[in-house]
Length: 124
Image (cartoon, rainbow, N blue to C red; front, side):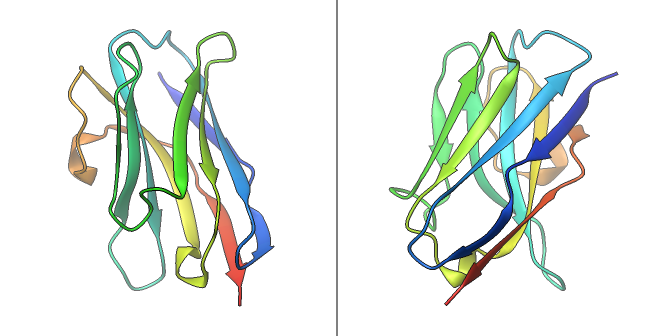
């Protein structure tokens, strides 16, 4: 069984930065893709970013491109999401997710393990 535990959320002013972390346990990474999604009440959970663990290829939603950076640390079994130049519209619960294979996907349904989420609030 895979467990994903997010941390690093909080309250920050617009223009500030936060770094989210997702600790992965229960298996080694191998050929997996790790993703970050976010959700606000009443809206669909949306794709933010993903990284192919072995190839280190990355992909970003247009709304965060140039501001967010995804990375992974094999030794710590952790994937990070560095969020800079935060905007009030980035406010959401952020979820870490994983899916087997090599192909990065933006589709929520293709990820089979999820963390519990961490709240990010950006004040104006």
